Length: 293
View 1 (tube, rainbow, N blue to C red):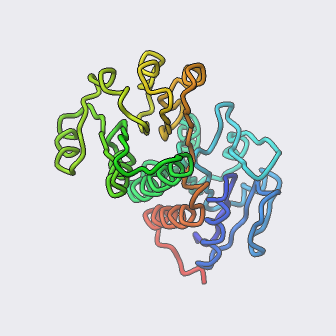
View 2: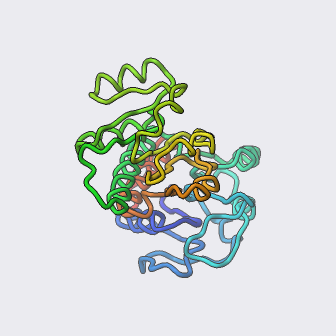
View 3: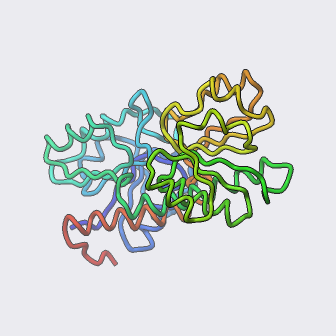
């Protein structure tokens, strides 16, 4: 019976996930939310040993920090992700975002079904749309002039880059998109934006007032930053380690923002709903979900 969920760690997205699952009629227990305003129907648990009773465990995105501790925005208590996972029983379902490979391997060895929702297409597309919307909102808060006709550069043409550039174009910004694949460059041109080959970035970067980076690699190095307008704004949306040399940007007086986890900050309710739908999709693929109501 997949009628209960244990939610371990997370930010406001996880709080709204709990609310959404409860609304669907599922029993929800939460760990790592001592300082959150949680729904009264959810049961707070404080001991990792409680996970020995779990059927389905949902972890946040990302599920852990660099030291391996579970991400917990609403708890001062530090808990190793491995301490949680080692108590999840055989036959349970473990669902998380950007799960460490070590965690995946160890869970599979113990016959736990493991799924990473970060790589699910239905999650990735909708999460990218939220990220793009939030990124534009963040930019508008930072600007002191209209975005209309402003020269804006988007680095990368993956899910976020494509959705972001479309929103910027709709706001009448003068959008250029840098990509490596010739097929992407063709799509960029066909959608009414200016394509730019990455190899030509150094020649062009100085003409942009705003740069959005979506590439999780060192694309905005000091050598490129020195060529930028000193009044420019960089918003880096790429996952860690991001793509901007933030130390060099500060030295050069360029405004550079590391904008991670935007869906959880700008639209946590919607992000929680998206996560709920993805989690239930995953469960439905493992076995038929009974009507918990």
